[in-house]
Length: 221
Length: 403
Image 1 (cartoon, chains in turn purple, orange):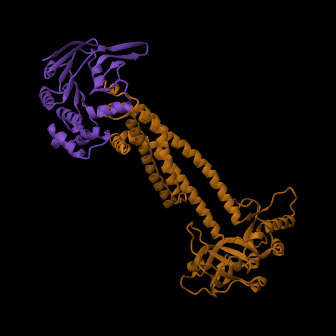
Image 2: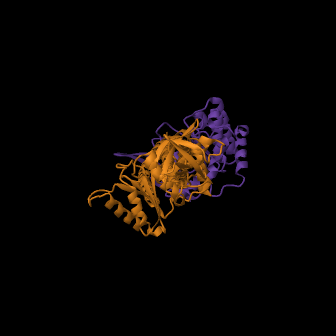
């Protein structure tokens, strides 16, 4: 990532949220992004996750220039390379865990033939093999978050991005979720966490501290 | 393939937003139901009138002229005493005319011993049975001798026979019509009650001369049935009849006719006019209600997109393109519209059937309104789904997750 700037314009005035970020993340890293509210963590996350285009600058993901990509190409990148986990889970309401996990496969260029096996496998991996038919409303917060992790993993992405993944969970469930992330990292997945919680951040082996739209410190443990 | 998957997601989307979907359907359901009912009733009325024409026993070479001005038989005659036997004689003299049957009619009670029944007595001439192509079940029809001698003889339809005689042989028995006794000399073959409830067998025929002197005590006619040799001469014959009647009745050039024609073509024309008027109204009503239904779908969908920002965002995060989201919402609009159409068709079908069963209005169900409903609803869903689909697809995934 080079000289990334992102500004939002709001009628009369323009707010520059990211004021020139240079960042390089290697495959297999476990990165935590921390910082106070308004520092630009989430904005950086949306750019890293190809959810929005930077106002200026360049972003190479897996050797591919992402800035200026078409919607179609961006969608494909998100679909194949990145799995998202959100603070508020964002599961489809009224849809079973199984079908929620299946959802990213709908948008594949070529859906795998063994889709159902992959969903079962993915759910088993987060310890929800017996909860497949439950709708989000019938599951606890921890179970819902594990479902979203299963969903993020279904298309075998290289990168998992998590925005405050433990923000809505108690300490016991948080610990379990973090354990899953640790395991995923050991398997070779690149993990990028955005969090307020220093304890969660310390799971990573690299901590990026943000302040006022710039990287304040970047230390590898 | 991708489109099919978006279609399945649309089904799922409707499934998990049932309350909204039901609201969206409402306008379409009402629109399509009313369309179905109006079409069915229109058809039903037409069929009823067509059956009525069949009941009249008209062939294409026949027409009737009724005394009194007015239109067809739907309006009560204003001057029912205009036609005489002389008119019938003059019409009979026309070269194109094969048969003329002058008629009188009276509603009365027929009595045999202790049995009685309400029926219609017709005073007719012997040609009646030929003009109507009606066969005899038993006995004989009226003849010229009965006419000349004003005999008190009667030919009865199957209904009064059943009501008065049960299983007994009626031939030769004496029945009383008003205060006069008549001898039963023949029985007409039964035709059976029509679907519209008209009973052509509920009639008693007596010589016209006898009704004039015994039953009605008047000489003017109720109507004259005219039969030409070939159907092609019906228009020119009607013109000639008009001339005769106007001259005989002494009508000035400015005066309106004091008689009216009943012809199969005339009745058909009336039915067609009514149907066209109804179709124009139908087009208006259904256009308005379906437009409203479409606008309802569009607006509720626009609102529901606000509620579903998260869902759209998550789908986008996991690789849904703008086009995928647009397709999903467009499919949802079309599916909801079609479902509304299906429900509306069922409702309309049920209402038409009920109307039939309860005898409120005749309704005939045909397949056309169902096909029209399908096409219209698909079209409405497409048209009114475009705007919500566009809006949903243009949401940015990062902004949708901000909340």
